[in-house]
Image 1: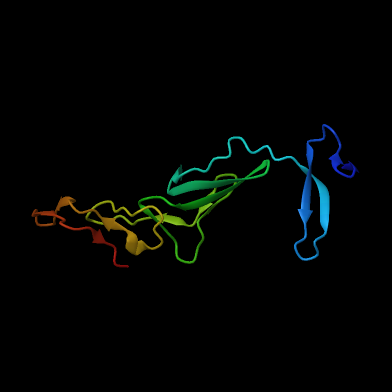
Image 2: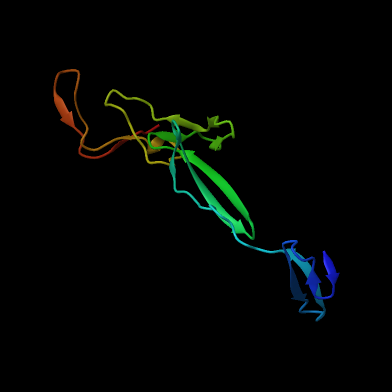
Length: 146
């Protein structure tokens, strides 16, 4: 792209850059694509993606190119299966999460990003009736012990 010392082809979108090697003290000139920045290169926070899954995207601008990395985790009420990665394909097929198991005390939940069934719990304040008709109320979260 260099037409002569100190210039790049006019209108090419390239600009002259100067680099000096600190060890050899040799200066080189190269034509590099002008950095104008990225548009709509925004990261996202965790949000629901598919049933049982959440996604978040980290976006970084490298000169004129927006690089995006999307991460996945299990949503609340689900946990990551042991030995499996949480992943979703570009076709939207997700693997690695499973719902907390139903109990006779009710529907359990878990925090988003949970990595074991022991993170599943019946929330404090849940009420019910036992097989003898006696009422009960949990005064603390009741966690899965498996």
